[in-house]
Amino acid sequence: MIDNQVLEAAERFAREFFAEDATGHDWHHMVRVRRTAERIAAQEGADQGIVALAALLHDADDRKISPDTSENLGNARAFLSAQGVSAADADAVLTAIREVSFSKNGDAQPSTLEAACVRDADRLDAIGAIGIARAFAYGGAHGRALHDPDGIDGAATTAHFHEKLLKLKDMMCTDAGRQLAEARDAVTRAYLEEFLLEWSGGR
Ligand code: ADP
Ligand code: NI
Image (tube, rainbow, N blue to C red):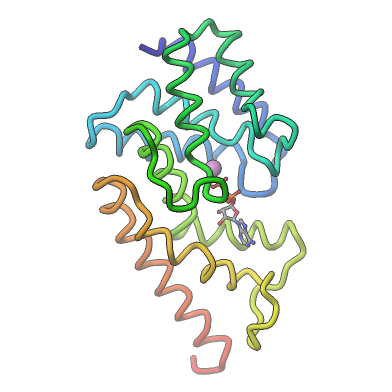
């Protein structure tokens, strides 16, 4: 059972920790992932407190942000311990955080329902209108081209759509996630089609 006080402390922690981020891991990403994860958890019958806490902390040990703690989840671990979260709850939260990562886990199924909820919510934030905005924001922050019509520049942002974003709908782990992914995936595909049409002078 996760106390409200702990969730409020996690909000404060995340707001401060992610204040400066320009790689798509800003504070608002944590808020959106939490909201979506709670929605999925309600439909799937997962533990809301574990899901909310894991969502708020899920990027605190991301390799891009904190390479030194990405293996042992040191930042999340330190927060949970400072808050006096029980060992069982802390384990559940850390498992969910560990199993969110796309690069680390690929297609492997999450081992708990709570992990599945947070993973689906994180992936949903990478598609649809917001996901598209995040992809171009990430590309801009890294000085990348919007698109390469010759398909040679694999770092162009549209390449990321093919490498990752268009695959996410079929990688959802929960029924609720699959339902939410439908509309977002349709938006992503329609957007890409329109983008290419305008690029080629067809519109
Ligand atoms: P998270 O850890 O939240 O799952 P990532 O670290 O994988 O997300 O990426 C953060 C955001 O940046 C996501 O919206 C993702 O689609 C976007 N992103 C990551 N890599 C690229 C890239 N090479 N080009 C464009 N966008 C990217
Ligand atoms: Ni994330």
